[in-house]
Length: 243
Image 1 (tube, rainbow, N blue to C red):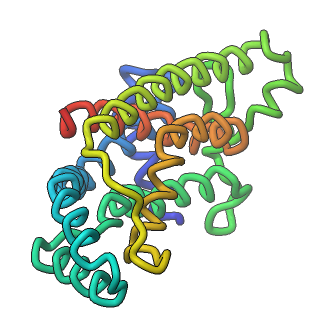
Image 2: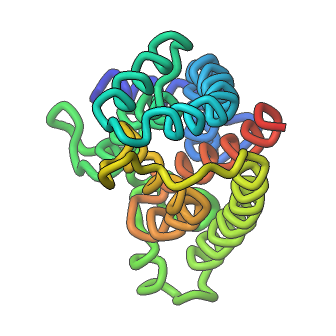
């Protein structure tokens, strides 16, 4: 943790001439961008996997018709098809999973009162008038929604809402471009392997962007900055990779 704190402090020192008292907040945004750059190859691979899965759908539909009365044979055929084409239904989760450690590092760093036995000085750093270690509830208790800290959160919520609406429309458009398949069940009502998970994710996916609003409201501001920056990056990245 102390190593990570030193990294954030060094980045803040580099950005101090440009951002002044908000240098640490800028350092968190820069750190998030660096993490996303490292994860970008996985995002590109996920985009290729999504396109490959879309192309496989007509072949899976044909397998359903061919093996409608033999669920076990259908399962083997679908699994063999995925293995042959080197496609995983859950490969798109990798970019998000790889970012979890970075998010929790920031969350823990700005939730801890001490680091290495010494007081955590980072908690006093601010984004304009809002402490990076504070939460939205703290801002509401110190000046309310229209207070200096409350206005910082208002801007963040507006940014997140805008990105969420953009992501929602992008996801709906992407899903609408996929071929429509017959119900994902085999002969005796047995679910095609992996189809249940894919169906559940497909239903929830358009709304996942809006969950970010809740996250921003409950985590320390430093972690919220990570979430806002990463979510914005994801929206732009998806618009480019899935066009």
